[in-house]
Image 1 (cartoon, rainbow, N blue to C red):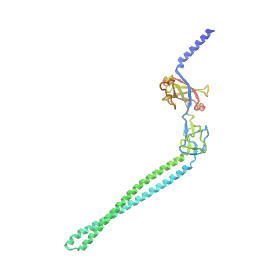
Image 2 (image 1 turned 30 degrees about the vertical axis):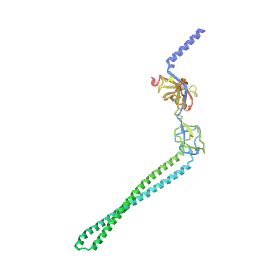
Image 3 (image 1 turned 45 degrees about the vertical axis):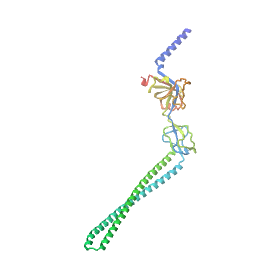
Image 4 (image 1 turned 90 degrees about the vertical axis):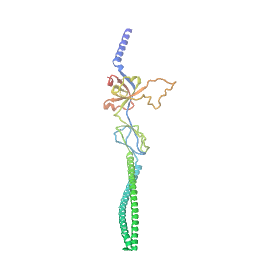
Length: 340
């Protein structure tokens, strides 16, 4: 009897040793693994009272579906005010352009007046120059000379008046050009405010950013929500993956691309498959909210675990039965993938 037991034990040990040598030593396994999804938090971009909630918990949604509507009355009033400000700014621009055109017309008129006055002044000066020798010879009287001189002086004064008016008209043009620039800036600002008001109106309708299933819905009709308040979560049920935490001592032969066998606790007896996609740049403890402090005097060495992302390869029917948070046992075959 003892001999039989001994032979059986040796056979079992031999079989275990053979199995480990041919296969077991190439496998790395962990049950510290959970299905994950890159879920999206749904939050409004504006503040207001919730007018409608159009989805229920666990509902399937498509990207672009309307989830929540926020009362838009305040934002509609702001939009109308922005439209009125834009209209006013455009009217200011039209007035400024009209004033600029009027000022340029006045410049043209002033230039013509300067030219006319200068022509008269030149003629008056030529008359003075012509009569001066005649007075000396007695061909013209001193009274005529005095009249010519007076006419010349009046013409010169008219030239100065016309030049002053021209300078004033040019200054008015410069002022009008500055007013046009300011009015254009006002129009641009009003258009920006109008676009912002329209965006606020658009943002009162909260839409789904991705395809998925609604979870963690906390929003209720009539609730006052702030910009950034989490209303619900969308979980992309077709883009699930596995986050498996392996001991650092198991990583020596593990590489991206290696095959992984998955056993989901919720699906007993059913084997799924996947591949290693990436390794975390730090251990789980490194990214913990409160990391451990191994100061001198209190150090205890603990084997750390490294999160490994693993894709899930299965049929849509099986994928539909998986949800984030499910526990999984993951076994990596280090002979596959890049390890070959």
